[in-house]
Image 1 (cartoon, rainbow, N blue to C red):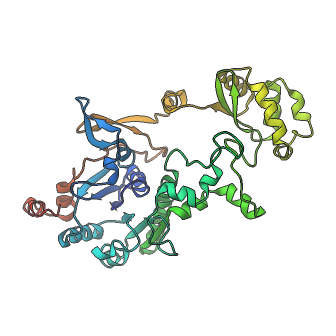
Image 2 (image 1 turned 60 degrees about the horizontal axis):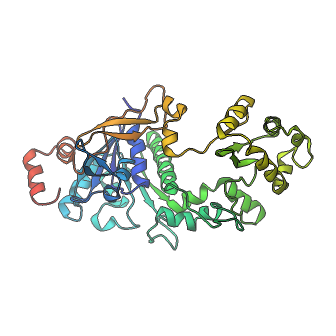
Image 3 (image 1 turned 45 degrees about the vertical axis):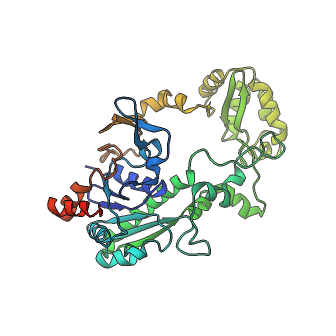
Length: 406
């Protein structure tokens, strides 16, 4: 039994940030009911190729993007632009603990599905709204997408090759990281609201914004600016506060060296055959290495090209110096540690036989994550949910289906 198996979540969200939060809650045991538009469903169902292939090797309608964020959920298709559809969603909300939605600010009020309306039918409800810019402020009504927020929120100014180098310029992160982080923060906020409700019996509205999360996650770089008044500059793969902490060339590629303290630097210098570096006043401490970055980095690059990546990783690991290769995803999923931790798995799927998934990183000793169900087909559980949760008989369900409500 999962840690959250006593909870029901009504997931009205689409794309990534909201569904990511819903999947985390579902992985932890919650009954997550994903409400989708009849006919089309979540936008990401069609965000391909690639698409999952069926047993005959033909593409299904399930895009890989959708499959990344919707396992362990039940899909119900309801047209809540119709009054009967709105009634169904309100009744489901009345029997739920949590609602997650990512419509534009005020977008659900027209359907009577905003927080105020659903709080009236369920005062204990925790209602999480995820938007680009939050419920207040001059940008509140704007749509917000991860790529745009990475730019506006400062992350891209820190990412990419520095000025003067080939290919210089801002670059977005290779996954929709702001969406993922917003999903994580939303889950934390929902669990905090649940803890408060356990003490008081009172639900609440959770206002989550991609921009807020993006700014919060600038972490040390934000503080570098706030304490100096100088915006940090792009450093490629280098670190603004630690040296050496970046990629270096090898005889057959590149590797990553992450020296976290002066003792590790001394060990690295010895393995590199340059023990004098550790006693050089320019390089003996991290503060001095940062100040003399332009002198030290070329020296290290001249040394690292004489060994292969595997040789550097092997020798530095023996010396206790953190380092590693730069893997593509094929190499990563074959890494011994990734295999040992079971980070790739398969779940039974009605069209494909099985669907690959990336395992949850959450490891709980008493209530481990269970992979109960593949990401659902569109509307796969409509009948079951309406009958089970709302107590509707099959005749009533068929009437709604014939009327196009479900």
